[in-house]
Image (cartoon, rainbow, N blue to C red; front, side):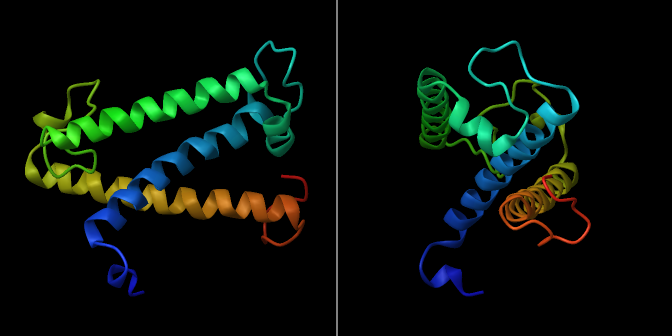
Length: 145
């Protein structure tokens, strides 16, 4: 595609992984209210994911942005300490303490799986949004999905 002429390839890979991880969470967020339901809340009363964005209280959005900023700060600090959040070295965040137990082949397999799942999640989420605003634009997805 030639994107590396505008940005370093390692930066683009980090961005792809970060966006893929966000898209995986976004897929869960799209399905969760429709399948499981909503939490007991007075502000968000819909299972429509787009309408829920507007219904969420501003205090929730502020907390969400602070939380995301804290995660980015942890990633940045970890990189300054020589750690990685892309899997090329010691993990910045490894709550389960499993990453260092994997051998090189298992780590490479896990990195590839995460990259592929992230790419699929980005395509999937983009298709949900497209089908939401343009019903019938994605074959196989019902209108209003």
